[in-house]
Image (cartoon, rainbow, N blue to C red; front, side):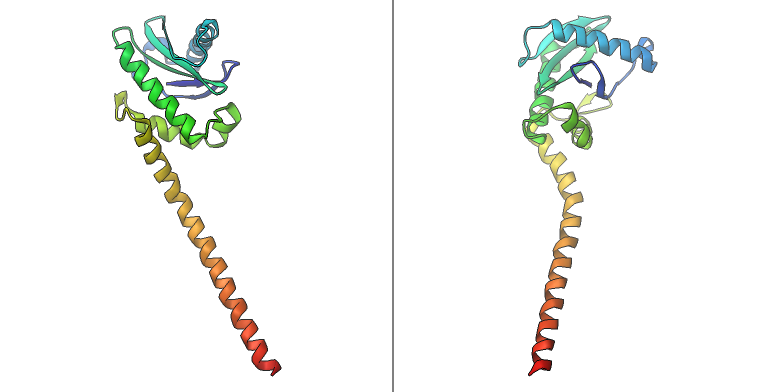
Length: 175
């Protein structure tokens, strides 16, 4: 799974069962540039497309201003890969509120990473439902955020009590 910006710069990638031809970062970079060439030659910006490159079947789609690629073996079922791609793209649109761009993704890269982890683990598909992926991702981030929100609410509550206590004390002292 690879996410690239329009200049073919990697935003995120996760390779499973990497063949020897893609073991190095430079080989992966060349592969990703070739993927981007395939994507830019395609006329289907909003739809997913299928291509072959080297020994891979590739499905890709533009989401916002980024390109999402899923590569599988030549024997891999294109419909399954396309379904995975659609699921991931739907989840990203929901998670990033239809503003999927390089800056937005890099700002909250954990959302993309968690979505990919909820979709696939070690090359095995875990979920095919974008809403399930979004629920799992947001529950994780909501749990992280709820701790800080609770502390802020408590501190606001504590300050309000302290202020009320001070005002009551002042009113008794001034009488």
